[in-house]
Length: 103
Image (cartoon, rainbow, N blue to C red; front, side, top):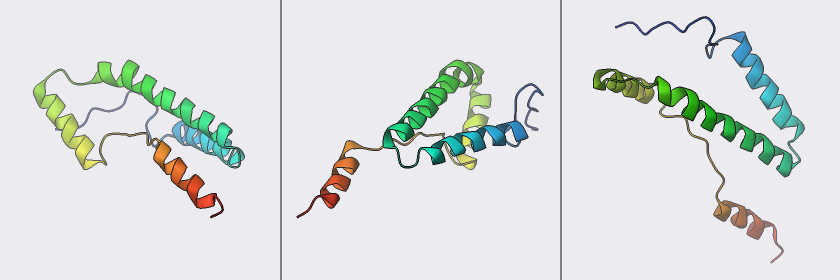
């Protein structure tokens, strides 16, 4: 079974447009590298975009049949798993703070 081609109006992950967007986000993050509030803002915006893509685009695009869903899940498993946005835990922040406090 051949995977369906991506319609031309949708950028693939290999398109210059996609790489330019990633580069722009990375540039913004690098400019904020010493500003934790600025970096948190960048991460919040990325998380919001991730949520929007999941809810408004991915969920409606999911397969309607068990066979197609199984094929999608096999593809997800073979290609690195489900996309995940890591969140720093409060415990990690407290641990860092304890390390920096004078004894």
